[in-house]
Length: 632
Image (cartoon, rainbow, N blue to C red):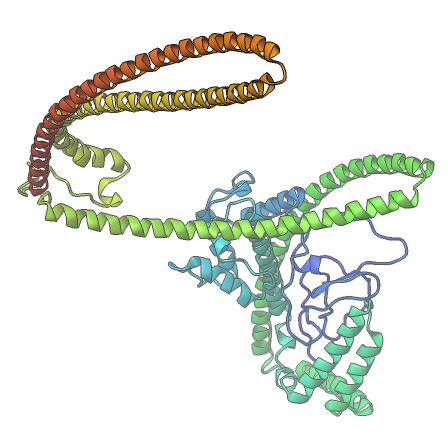
């Protein structure tokens, strides 16, 4: 067996105190210790103990492994509360202390680490990584891909996204990057402790290196690790049976004979005594041996002195930490006292109040709703990160499109003979747009003074001539609109006259129908009178006198009716004659007005034709001017 240095990931004490060390000293420790998590008190149950493995979380007596049921690694979620502001502040303080203790070349403070820039993060990462590899140099290209790859190569379990490297100081990306830096700090501490142990115990690791590299030894070691890890996942922290079994297998593997070993030890002791006796008796090579021993002791003394210096610095650092922790402990005691008072108050409220099943169901429902809200916010955070990445890609595409547009502008300017400055149409002006590096911070002002102002002067000359033509065109358009409005008014007048004629025709037709109806009524009255006359004539034979008297009365009545009928016929005839004459006069007047309007329309059409000719000439002039401007 070799005396290998301890492979614990943290400098914190073991959870179970043991007076002896394990054969491999590689019992998996808490995940909190792996990543240097600060000690934050959490409430624990009095009936069960929550244990945390390096490979995942578990509750009670069982632990979960990072390997699924089919052996494939699952994506692990960082158990550290990186979004807790208090925890982030403690991590920033720890990072600042580490950088100050190890001589960080730049100026660093807790305030600067609240939201550092990408450049500061790269300096810190390069400094910490150089403590592991002094020959390390930060790559000059694709840093956002190289840093996550280097962390994966070192064994960091929680990957950093490529998009988070572009905005490292953002509130949603800095906690993950800070956690990676703390993990790297723990790796540096482990590396330094292992290197110090190798220096102190270098003589014990060379004698058994050949044996430990054998296949059988590796098999025994892996079996031992598998058994102890399975028991650890079930909640155990000591492995005495496995240690005893592993030791017996090693003895059996290397054919260790206890009796022979004891006899060899006795022989070794006898030989040492004989060697000392012979050295005392012989004085020939004693001086050389003493010199060699002196050199060895001087070398060991230098090593011990350097180690003592390192331990003294480490002790002073621990004393500083102890002072800080004592202050934090006092603050924590005060906070604990306040929490105890709050717990007593809440316990009093809990004892006095009574929960119903409806209240318990409501509390469980609210808890489920809060869990759903947390998951939705996590998804929203991932979507926001993806959106930031898409926006950055869109910005790069926009820059590329701007460069393409700039190339098209230069090509068009060369076609228009505006570039270079001595071109035909440049008029001594420089219309070329250069890159941002050529201009400096006043790019927009220089471009505006270089290109826009001369173009504006040229456009003003063109716009003045164009405005005069536009004013002329507007005046002609107003004239045309006025003529069109006059035409529309006359058309409306004609429509009104036609409507009046139509109404008069309807009135005339209605009157004719009434006259015909009255004539039919009168004819019916005459027929009725004749029939009555015949009836009277028939009754004459019955009573002549009565008939004669009735005849006289009837004749008198007849004459009266006939006179009234004639008078009414005469009046109707007079009325019809008057209506016909008025209608004829109205038609003559309407016809005269229509003829006048037709003559006016002919005149207006002549004017419109003349205006159209003028407009056609103006359009030709404008087209000629535009062609000339394009040629210029």
